Image (cartoon, rainbow, N blue to C red; front, side, top):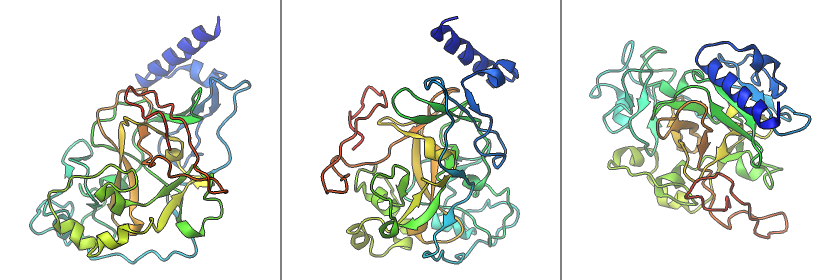
Length: 325
């Protein structure tokens, strides 16, 4: 059996597994390098496969975590005011969290909840709200529900693909790492795992981020009265997933991505420290690679000597910008 036939067989085995047919060929395949990169921390095992390195190696160099670690220099605000709903929030008039979302709930009911549209910021119910854990306004706080695979790509390092159909608007995974101050990172240059919490820049489409179209100003005004002044500065906080992180650290950039970045506030109301959650931008079929737009502005990355760095993009989209930065 040649290499192409081996890859085709492995791919068919995975398709059969996705259909519920437990395949022994997957567990015995030489491309399987890890049966669960989360080491049991996620409710669903996340396998890792490597069909390109010889010998195949597993992803290493980080510790898997499922919640952000907080740098010692950061003080996370205490919980803001919550709603007084009971069980699950249903009334947009009486729910205090719905009021923050422009007097509406951001998620559609049913099927676990789907974000109706990208928003400047999503206010979810938090720990001091009267509603319970199954509230329809706590969608992004639930555990991983889609089966994901970390796989080795021929020219992009590691990537992530789904084994399940993911409907448009569904939360896929939160970007997890160490919540840090940008100006206190010693290894910022060359660190490809830093995600700046730039919700304010996303709102206005600054720095390469896709601008959000918000018809309501109330929510925006509620978290920042001086948004234009704050945009003059670089993001103050970031999530560094270089040494600690979850499966999201392996998701690649895409010029035409199938995921989008959504800032969410749940346990407090400070937008500078918003949670970063990746949602499905469209219906995603099984076995498709997951990507999101890293939001780099061309010629915005410099090396230690101050020279502009350039990196080719290999996302493969017809509308590819050819450069990541």
